[in-house]
Image (cartoon, rainbow over all chains, first blue to last red; front, side):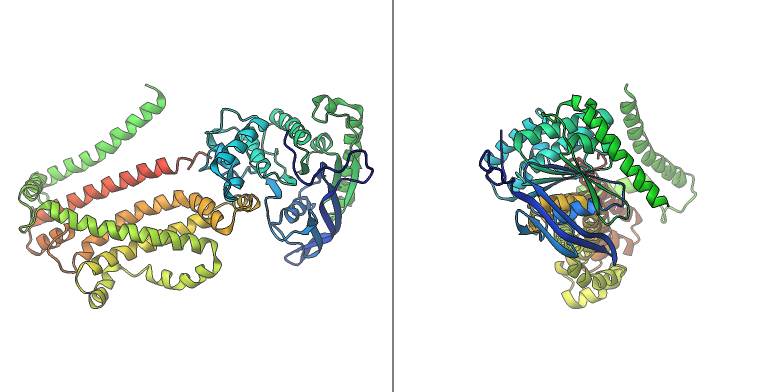
Length: 271
Length: 261
């Protein structure tokens, strides 16, 4: 399967995998009001970090800073050791709104990053075909986005980002608009693709189940907390894409723990 | 017959019926003597003049030559006006500095009726082809700029962000995302501009000359040849209808995603 990013560290050596994203005391003000304060975070290669919290907790702001859509007001934001100065194909974004180009076929949507980079058409088609197979859209290469269901649109959005081989994929509530069955299938697909490609993922969600099922780590933020988070490590058996994990005792336990903490934060907010 | 097909058939029936009813009303009004025939000639008389125009031409020039003169004027003005209007309109939608530069001149020029500009255009550009084409061009240009501007502004922020984060340069974002997402509004603009173009054509042919559909209408009305005025109006109307249907059809094919998201 395809792998990308920095070359893998020597096997069996204790030192950790390279840092893909690093935030140091990042702050962001919006119209003079602070949204994030002193947020520090390190994300390493191969990790899936689920950022969980209610609307207004700053999770999307965090993602937008890493994506380069927003500039931090203070602190340092690094991607692969370089300061983030704007959006770029090393940090692919999957949107809740899909954000597909309606005037392009599935194939051309997927090949967009390659064609922007001036790669030859044959290479574009070859990579698009690989990605179509990877996300399970075979037979829909020539379809237009409006001819696809919500779940298939997001598969296309995912393939479009994967085609540019980003060092990190930033997913902003990507499955919020699809039905429950499709969402669960897509969650399993994400983990299968993640295991196959070794890509790093930051996954924004407000679903506890989604965070526990997908994340290696969960960051729980609260409304008005300026991005301060509580962190949980998720210890579920491999392969993580196994749907049986949803019934695992550790899944149930951790879901309960996160749920209680979230309820406690609501109670604190109401007081 | 499927419900969709039945709805389509009803649509076509109504679209054909409405002009036939108007024609019937016209026949009735003239045959019953409700209006004087010099004000509203009967359709048969208009048809006779139209036949005469088609076979004999008008004022010694064949109808084909009148048509060619008018269509060339509208065609050149429409193409150039649309090209410049769309380019500047899209740029205004994305680059605040360009928007600021063009805002006051464009919005001051837009409400001025083209007829009011005719004396100036005669002074500046004479009474030849240039004046006529420029007058139509100006109207088309201003309409297209407004529509392209609005189209560019309506491009969803997520699409721009998606393109940028996939590595598109400013130019690539503009050509491959902003322009296509403005296409639905641009095609609507083209239809409005085409209609306006033909109406300005009649005014522009006030600027001297001896041929053109507008010339026929103006010349015939100067000599109270009302049936020829109507024949000229019918020809312009028919061309206007045909060009509108053509643009609408081409637009639906080009902008196949519109309304299906």
